[in-house]
Structure formats: C-alpha cells, structure tokens
Image (tube, rainbow, N blue to C red; front, side, top):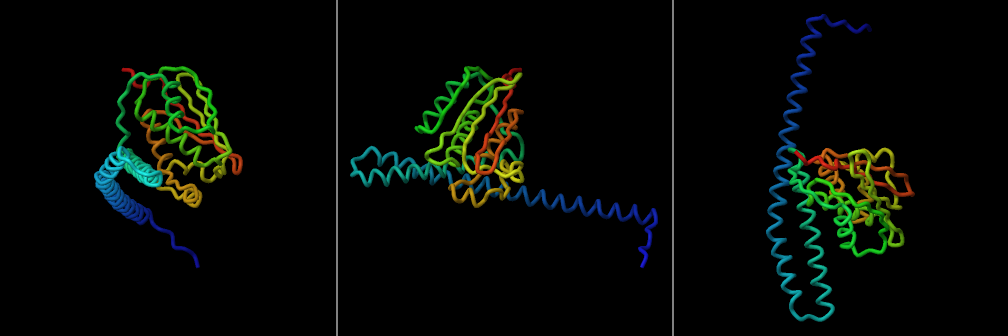
Length: 253
C-alpha cells in the first residue's frame, strides 16, 4: 500500500501543529522543573535550623566532662550533623546555579597557601602534592569549596593504602589544578554525566562509597561561574584525573 503524499498546505499545517505541541511540552517541563527547584531550596532551608541547633548543642556538650565512650558518641553526632549541613548547603548552591551562575565575590589570594591549608584539614598521609605559588583573582570561598570537594572525592574513591596526587601549574592565562586517584575509574559513557546533579551515573558506586555525587555537580557550577573548565580523564580499574582550569585574573575590571 502506497503512502499518500501530503500536500504543501498539509505539511505546513502539520509542522505548525508539531511546533505548537513541542512548545507546550517544553513549557510544562519548565514549570515542573521550576517547582522542583523551589521545593528543594525551601526544604533545604527548613533543614538548616534544626541542624544548627544540633551542632551548637554538641559543641556545648564537648566542653563538659564525659567518659571516652560518650565523647566518641558526641563527636560522631557532630561529624554527621556537619556533613548533613554541608550537603544541604551544596544542594542549595546547585539549585541556585540552575537558575543563574553562582554569584561570586572576587579577591586576590595565593593558591599554594590556600590549597595547603585545605590539604592539612584532611589530616591524611595519602596525599602527595606539588604546588606552584601563584596569586589569582577569584572567589576565595568558592575556590576553597571547589578544591575541598575534589580532594574529598578523590580520597573517597581510593583505598586507604592508595595515595592521591595533586599538582598545580599555569597554562597560558589559566591556573590549573589536577588531582589523580587510583580508584575504580569512570567509564567513557559516564564521563560526560559525572558532573550532572540529576544523572544516575555510578549510582551503585556512590552507594558503596557513601557519596551523593553532589560535590562534583557543585564543582562544575563553581568552575562555570568563573568561566573556567573542568573535565575528567579516567580508565576503569586504573583511576581518574580531574582537571580544573580557572582564569587567573577574570575578576579584574
């Protein structure tokens, strides 16, 4: 049976109909997505008040006399509460970044001193690093957040006996930060999804490592806000190298 050919007028009419339907579906999707983002933001803010109370009371309890077992319990409560608080802040930042770029407050700071301080906070013997001294103009708080999340992610996906390696260098007008782990690696299919907050990439792996993937999504948002570049090079069972490149003087006007 031959397919009846559509006339020019029918083709135009069908094209218009499809365009109208596509526009309607896009608008519906946008409305749903906006509602989801608003819900996440409001829900996250509601969590912060009780978390602040929990953290505050555990800090008060730490000043009192306790046996060693009780001290461990209090320390665990505080650590878990702080982790949830950081997670909530990350979610809020991700939601904000979906509307617009994150707002940045530029200042000059030395990258070597900043990164060394972050590394020392981890109190880990599994970090090798070679850092150059370089002043850049960027958002200091967001820069620390970016580096902290990348180091935390690398340690999380490496075994206790594996070292991670950090190097910094300059490439034209960009400050570059590379961090390498020797964990399970990321497949080629998932490399483009790893920074996507809503992606289901490596869901089983995140569960095993007690991670959410939000940290990497935030790294992407922070890098994009600075008009920088973030990418990953990885091979299964051999590890991953995350590379960040930020303009050295983007914030100068």
